[in-house]
Amino acid sequence: MRDTARKTGLGLMGSVLLMVGLGFLTTAAWIVLEAEYGAATAALVLGCIYTGLALVAFAATGSKKPQARTAQERGHPPSSSPMSLVLTAFLDGLGSGYKARDEFRR
Image (cartoon, rainbow, N blue to C red; front, side, top):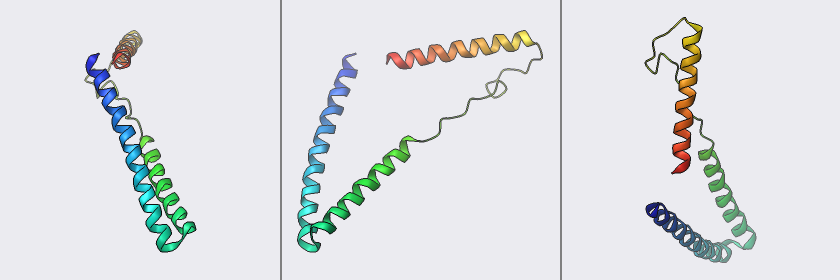
């Protein structure tokens, strides 16, 4: 628990410092671009950069989830009995539930 709190605190501090740094970099870029090309061009360039970075971030979060493996891929022998299929499905679901619960508690 203490390790999680430490990691969360450091992550929050890093995020705040990153935002401050991006603010200063944006201001510096604005000053240079505005002096060279004017305010409209500076706003257009910085807006395009931030929009492009946001689109890349959204694309990275939209990655596909891995597909579920079949019983044969998991090493379970194929079975023709309906009851064994029901039991296998129940145990797979139970295992997935325990795994999800354990990941939720972390």
